[in-house]
Length: 129
Image 1 (tube, one colour):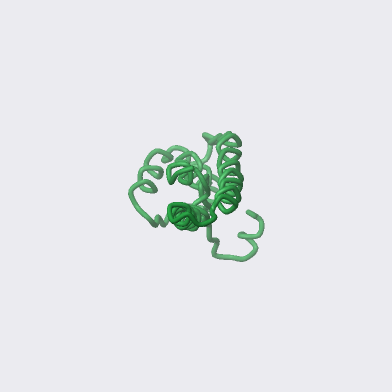
Image 2: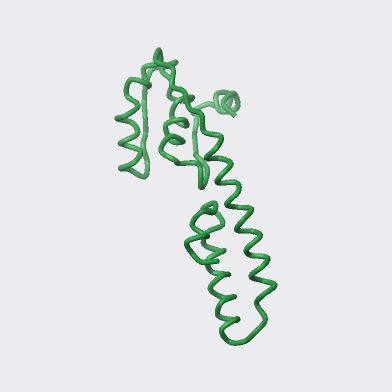
């Protein structure tokens, strides 16, 4: 196992797995016991990687053409790629809440982590969940 393998894990796990791998390899180099720890880490890496793979396989994205946001999908995707934060405003019913997460998934955002989504009203947020 190496750091490249760990890069296929969920983002939430990558840092701690890399740190543990580094420490275990250091122990191994100093002739200290590390085999059990490496085996446990390998199982955890395999599990985290399996979640990433299942998310990739589950992608079946469809954009309804009747929604205004679908016409601007490429522009919105480019903005998401270029900026860490994007604020999108549009008319009610334009597809902001339902289509933005799909655009993010199409860009492979949300595969290694989660997509954050806010709503101004609690009721709207609960209906999306």
